[in-house]
Amino acid sequence: MGKILCAIRGGPDSRPTQEQAIALAKERGDELIFLYVADVSFLDRTAAPLVVDVDSELELMGWFQLAMAREQAAAQGVEAEIIVRHGHLRTELVAAARQVGATLILLGRPLEETALFDQESLQALAAHLQAATGAEVRAL
Image (cartoon, rainbow, N blue to C red; front, side):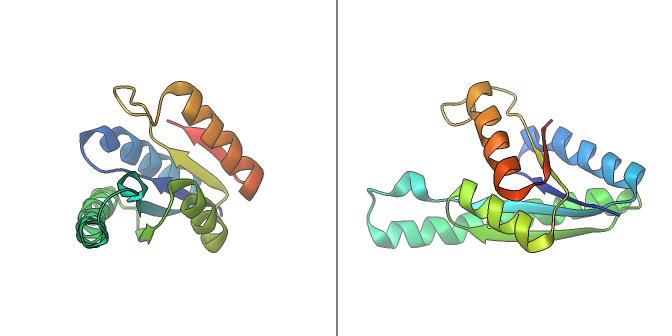
C-alpha cells in the first residue's frame, strides 16, 4: 500500500484535485494525506507584525480547507490525514513527502495561469519534487 500526498491551495480550483486524489486512493487502496503550506514569502518586504498576522490567517484557512477535503474523502469512504506546514512551498513539499513516506505526490493545476504556476513552472516543480523525494509526481 502506498501513500498519496496531495498538496492543495484551497478554493474552487482545488476541488478537482481533491476529487482525483480521493478516487486514486480508493482505487489503489493507498493512504491519503492532504497538505496545505502556509507560505508568506510573498510578504518578504513587509513589516514583521503583518507577516505574523497573515501567517496565522493562512494557517487557519489551511486547516479549514483541509478539514473540508477530509470530509469530502470521508463521504466517499476514504480516510484522509491532514497536515499544515509553514515555509516556502518547495521546501515544505519535499519535507512533508519525506516525513510521510509519500509514494505519489499530486499537484493541482490552477484553472487560470498565474505568475507562480504557469505550465513550465509546474513541470519544474514536479521534476524537483521527484528528484528530491523519489516519489512519482503528477500534476492533475
